[in-house]
Amino acid sequence: MPARTTGFRADAVAGATAAAVVLPKAMAYATVAGLPVAVGLYTAFVPAIVYGVLGSSRVLSVTSTTTLAILTGAELSMMIPDGDPARTAAACATLTALVGAMLVAARLLKLGVVADFISVPVLTGFKAGIGLVILLDQIPKLLGLHIGKQSFFADALSLVQRLPETSVPTLTVAGITLAALIGMERLKPHSPAPLVTVAGAIAASWLLDFGVRGIPTVGPIPQGLPGLTLPDPALVQALLPGAAGIALMSFAESIAAARAFVATSDPPIEANRELVATGAANLAGAFLGAMPAGGGTSQTGVVRAAGGRTQTASLVVAAAALATMLVLAPILSLLPHATLAAVVVVYSVGLIQPGEFRAIVKVRQMEFRWAVIAAIGVLVFGTLQGIVVAVALSLVGLAIQTARPTVAVIGRKRGADVLRPVSPKHPDDETLDGLLIVRPVGRLYFANAQNVGDKIRLLIAQHQPRVIVLDFSRVPDIEYSALKMLQEGIRRTDVAVWLAGLNPGVLDMVRRSGLGEELGPDRLLFNARVAMQRYQDMQDKPAPD
Image (tube, rainbow, N blue to C red; front, side, top):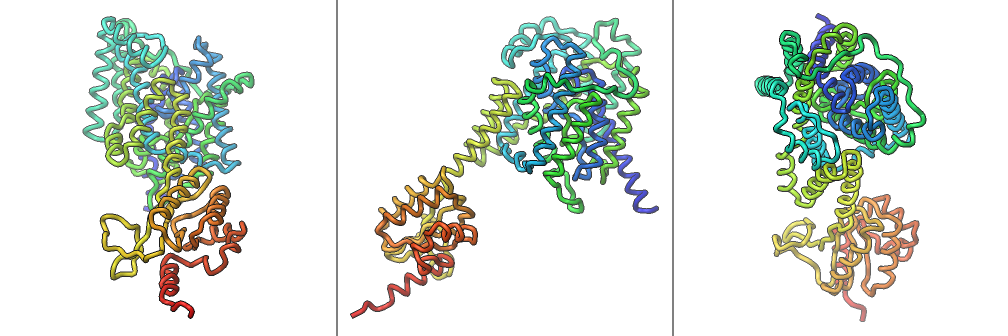
């Protein structure tokens, strides 16, 4: 059998398997956003096709995700508090179009690196907060309760107070669905468990007439292709901040999932191309009723686990979504809301990763504190504001880490040509009397230049050297403010200063600033070894009569 035919068959099987998982989840995520379940199908249809044509990942599945759904719901609920269907649809189209436009604009400005501005610990905390918000949002649906949304802690209190009003029939449906989902996932991960449970719930709803028994169902779903939905220009300004946060998370999730599942034989993931692909996917989806979309780890994992090799698998998912819209829409109207809520709970609880928190605290307690604060930020300030908290924490953490770089005193291992930081672990390391070799580590810039300078001055006062060598072999770059501070410090000190180990970029900065001329070529040395040998030669040279 030709390899091309075999590859297509593998992708078709992977796509069909993924569709069995993705479509029920997409409908469930639409309910998280407060939108009709049909919107989930539209999101699994249009964006998947556009990304499949433009994306750089061979297996990334672009539809809705739990994070994007909750962020979308938060923005739409603020914009259309009364939930008017027509206005909500226009607001959703406007929001999705803005997300797409921002992603494309980010590509034009070459801002693919922005996705790296949220550190892994902070993202872990942010997602944990999102997971808790989603769980609290879905639990009332599992219990057959309706709770007016206020804030996380107020909603949690309302839920506890109204527990006696729980609907036993609705809770029974939810419990059976949860048991089936969890059982199938444990027995066979990445199985079509959502499809099986959704089909079973629909059959039970039809046979037992859930509507009569007071168990809420989805209700009528429009059959056929999605209609044209135009964004509302009047909403652009109000939706802009929220769209920026959703665009950031869409790209961050997409690039993370794409990188996580890239195979060694796959082409590299191109961040800027991903911006174009996800941006175009959202722009196209906006006009056809989709909510903001992005690549998801869980659905991409299903594609890879099922043997998917190319974006043909995503096109098969889109085809399955189309078939569902055209044929199965009347049947889906029987689907219980409790079943959709159970699907959301099972596939959102993974956002809360206690093991990851334990791993972080084991390595660095400061990053653990950032993760906890990010989670609390989502619960206290809300999901969209939580993005701002997450980015701000990441930047503050970066600033703190880089503002206090290591400044090590360098010695030579006794009996070997090895230079290394002096430490109590190596008490026999040699240093030369009158020579102090100091090695800063990291980029020197305005925020840490004063700190580095203070450390060097303390070392000079402690060691009283005749010559100090600044070993810049671990300094990739030196910013103008730091360079000027270095220049002024050298002018003021009575100690002879040599510079060693400058990379070409730093050396060029030193020369263009005039510092190189002030020092002279004899005090710009290739590395610390050369500096040490030069100092020894000077000491061995007999003094003139």
